[in-house]
Length: 294
Image 1 (tube, helix red, strand yellow):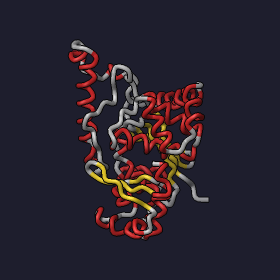
Image 2 (cartoon, one colour):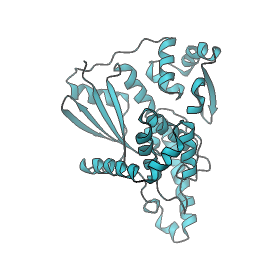
Image 3 (tube, helix red, strand yellow):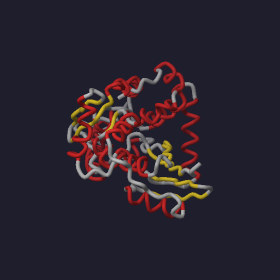
């Protein structure tokens, strides 16, 4: 059996930098013949929002301080759109409030999803990021998290039980300990592991950065092979990722433009296998047979 490479991505469901990296992840999937396994390690980006607000704003009241912080955070998100072009909408962002002061609930939610239904956990994470960054939902609120649970067709009762009974917290503590063991102070970060060897990379990596690390770590034992561009290759991507941006497909199949993506997906649109959903600054593709997942 071919040796596989594992990449552990230290992140947070609210991270725009990780959302913008999705096209690079899709390209890793398709160019390395499914030999790359991506794991998400929850790392608690905003454990207490008051650590990030302007102290001078805080003197004038918590609500004012949080309103101004949300506005600054929205600008940070928007400035990250250049990384891959994945659409970002942050108008009216209210991710944090006096009642919701941490991104820890999002981290706990992912761990609960992993425990309850591992096969849907990464789709849940993608849907959670979509709700946060594309739909601009206040996903630090538990009712918003549950809406994403329902979208992903995860058993709601089982999820709520796991979220609250200590299992999700215990799993999250292990992720935090993993990050602490590696001495990581900034996010995102990536731990590459192959054949008993490993290396750590910090910060935002584009696809070429990933390839460089893979070449060095594997001594060129793993090489990229561009996939065949076909209707079936698009269908496979959509089956694996029921909610996907055309930008991800463009990267995954080495297409030159989004116009090429539109041409390639026409038969799937005609057959009713997929639908297109416009969003501010872009559009997404949904697998129709799995609309309720997304």
